[in-house]
Length: 490
Ligand SMILES: [Ca+2]
Image (cartoon, rainbow, N blue to C red; front, top):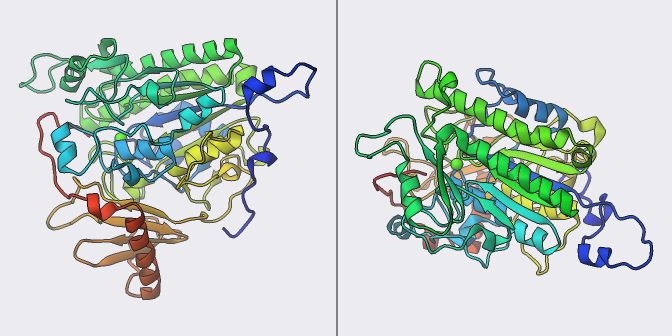
C-alpha cells in the first residue's frame, strides 16, 4: 500500500466485544457504545454494469442508487470466484474457497465428485457468523445459501450449524425454505409450474417448505429479515443479517407489469427492478429508525458476473464463470451514515482493491470482535477502506482465482485457467502455456495484452501464482470436466 496503513480495531469506535462481561458489571461502567449492526445484501448474478450508479440507465434501481449516493462505492471490488458457491464461501470464511474444495457451484453428488468438489462447506471452516454469534450477536441468514444441502444431497449441515440463530432459504440449502413456482411451465418435460429443483429440495426434508410465485421470493426473505431485526432490537443485541436474494439469477420471471416485451433481457430488467424495490424496504426500515440508522452498516454486492444474455458487465470483458473482469468484478456499496467518513459520502473509491475475502476480517475489526480461535484469513482487514478513512492504492496482498473446472470455454476460445491481481497488473494464464497481462488501472476492459513487453512482470507474477497453487493444493483437486445433468443450474 502506498498510503496510510490500516488502523487496528482498537482505533475504531467500538471496544472489543464481550457482551456478557459488559452486562455483568456491578458498578456504573463507562458507557460502551453498542457494537454496530451489519446487514449484508447480496444479489445473485448481477453484473458490474447493471446499476445506474455504475452506468446502466436501462434498469431502474432507485433504492440501490440512493444507497450508493448516501454511502461509499468501491469500484475495484472482486469476488472470490466467478460463480455462486465458491464466491459465497469466500464471503463466509474469509479464505480462498479452494482451501475447502468448493471450486464451482455445488450440484448433485455425482457432479460434485466428478469436479473434485465437496458436497458442502465443512463445519471446520471458520465463519463470520459464528465469530459474531460467539460474541453475542444475533445472527440470521435469509436467502440463497448454496454452500451445501441441494439436489440429491440432504445430509449437509443446517445453515444454523454455521453460526446462525435463524434462517430461511430456498432450494440451495436446508432448513425452512421458500420455493418458487412460475406462471407457466418452463419446460414441457416438467409436470407443473413448480421449479424442479424446488420440488427436489422438498424431497430432502429437513425444514418446512412453502411455494410462492417466483417474483415474491426475495420479498419473503426481506419480510423475515425485518422481523428478525426487530426481535434483535427488542432483545438489545447487535445483529448480523444476510439477505442473499436469488435474483436476478435465471430463470427470470418478474411480476406481470414488469415483463416488458417478454424477452429475456427485458424480463431481467424487471427482476432487477423488483429486487431493488424489495431491498429498498429493508434499507428504508433501517434508514427511518434513528436507533438503527446511526449504528448499522449495510453492505451491498453481487456474488458473480452476469449470465450471458441477461445482465451487463458494463465496460468490462467477460461474464459469469470467466476470470476476466466481467466475471469477478462486481458492484460494492458500503452504507453507514454515522460511521462513514463524512467527506466520503456519495463518493467512489477507485484506487483500492477489495475482495469478498476481506469481508470477514473487516467486519470483525469494525465490530471489535475477536474470534475465539485465531483464524488465518486470506482476506485482509480493510476497515479503513470500507469506512472511507483511506483510499489506499492497491491492497496488502495479491488476489488469485482459478477457473471453475466446469467452465473450460470453447475450443476456439479457451477460458483462462488462472488469474492474479497484484497492484495495477492482472495476469491470466492458459492451459497451453501462454499468458496475458493487463494494466487494469489503464485498461479495465482487458483489451491490450502487455505480456510481450513486460516479461519480467509476467515471470514474477507466474512465480507467485505457482506458490499460491501449491498453498491451496489446487492442481491436485482440479478436474476440468463439464457436468451434463438434467436440471443443470448453477
Ligand atoms: Ca451467482
